[in-house]
Image (cartoon, rainbow, N blue to C red; front, top):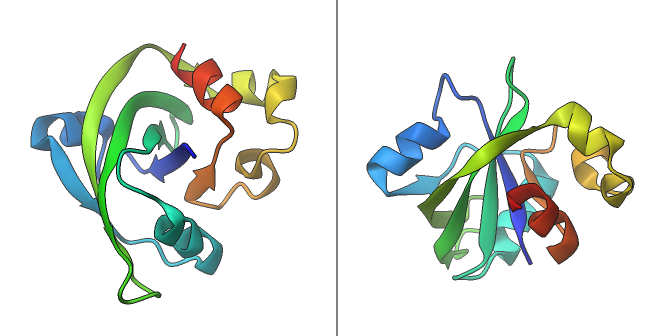
Length: 125
């Protein structure tokens, strides 16, 4: 299952991930978002979403490993994929029927959001 990961670009941007090549995705505290981190599996596809003033999907990544020994603080390592040719804005996502039932829109503060394959494909083109 693909997931969308939100990040504040002034804290850690997709450009930072591309530079670092891999990172541990941490700082997630919402119990539902933590549950989604625990459900991730190596090889699963991710999209990176910049929050704050930008509110756009900017790139892809994938899950390298998941260590969920501590259920409240799973350690998820991700690796950078590619920058999108064109960022996808939140208004565009809201306008797409495909996202009508998405937690991205229903629970806007959620920092880790599962996506359907169709939603993932629509975002990455």
